[in-house]
Length: 471
DNA sequence: ATTATCAATT
Image 1 (cartoon, rainbow, N blue to C red):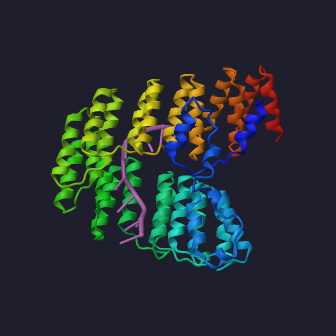
Image 2 (cartoon, chains in turn cyan, red):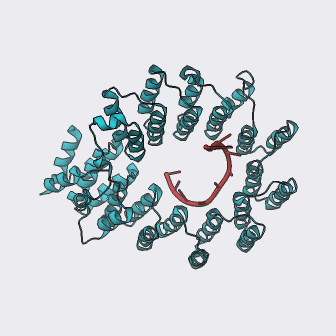
């Protein structure tokens, strides 16, 4: 009985690209078991399953469909297997195909596969645009693989690609964002040796570096040097400094810098206003912040959701849910659609307050409004349910999360399994375990220890565990 | 044809 249920779950395709709301609804409503809907979607969905897995002669003559296909595929493993299928028939991939696949793999942080592809580029003498390297350096940086980023930057020449200030800036930014300012400074000292001329963006990154080190004086010196070298400061240059002063509580200083910018003929953007608004609300001046938002429109600056986001953050931080609701109403009146971030703020608030029903309602509402939840959204709701001990409800959301291609954190899964076992929902616990195994999301030793310890009181689960461990 | 600034999380 248990096995058949698990079998059914494990044979369902893990990554179907189907309408989010539809899948969410079928998976969430208790009238239907959470994994019974896959099959019914199979024939209708325009999913990756309909793609030919074996190359046909027809496809070989037309290289465009491969790229189009590749762009549609979400699962990087699938994308790489399609790539190989073509290659095996003697098809020679070109630069756009490589670029597309490299971006896809880097985004899913499969850097091993990225390196394999880079190797192909070298062996087949395919010239690559600098853009690809810039993208890769950034992805390495986000994954905190700073040394990988440095290595790639130094190896660019071996790919027959000349380095420009673009890739230089990309690496410089990675170094600064990862607290490697010594390396950043070393790079700056060597820039002329590399034939790199610093541009405005380079200076913006350097200013950010000093501000992150809390050194206002040095940041100002760089700003002065910028003007000396006749490199025009941009809105971003000013925004960096405005943001710094606001975070220090010096909104007056920020305001005068803002005026300075206007005097120099630089038009403030929505971010400039958002920063000032944030500064004001952190000083408890919500009304002034809101007034500034209207001033901004009067000055002809286009309002962005960030500006509402700043106000919403402040209201929810103070727990003023009534005012938060009227802000939502106001947005609706003005036909400004809340985005994922706004919904996430609300969900975060309700989860922190242990009001899971409300959080869940937002999760449903946002999808009805046509806004797709992201990994953060799902994580917060699932964690919220775990916190309140509503593991069955959490499981339904977890399932919806997995179907839409997002992953929970290991701690969440661990908490979920323990909670389900505690409620003697062995089948459900097995289901979660199985799903994680399928996605190669393995537990660390500590989590296993906790689960095994708990499972010892549960003989059926022990069998499954042994099965999993031997595997 | 875009690298830098931006409200939610980790």
